[in-house]
Image 1 (cartoon, rainbow, N blue to C red):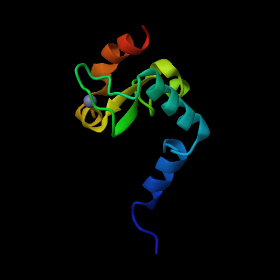
Image 2 (cartoon, protein in one colour; image 1 turned 90 degrees about the vertical axis):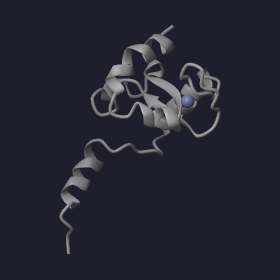
Image 3 (cartoon, rainbow, N blue to C red; image 1 turned 90 degrees about the horizontal axis):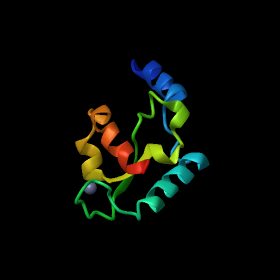
Image 4 (cartoon, protein in one colour; image 1 turned 60 degrees about the horizontal axis):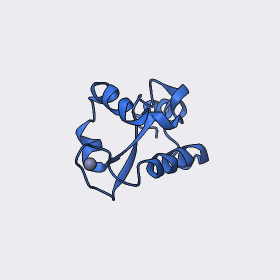
Length: 100
Ligand SMILES: [Zn+2]
């Protein structure tokens, strides 16, 4: 029997779900971490593990820049969680860091 939320899941998958194994995505993530020296870029944060390649301009809203290197920044899981829901607020600050 079909569960209620299947339609949502289906839409999510086909429209916006990130394919973590997409070679293009993996390459972008690797280059982002390489450029950032495999270290969280949050000012003063020394974390070098549990890193995330954060999309400065949101994955959902800006599909055309998903794999631009300037649109990625390395953050640790803690800082990535911290900016959740406030991505737009931090856009300018991060872009200033990656576009220099
Ligand atoms: Zn951090």
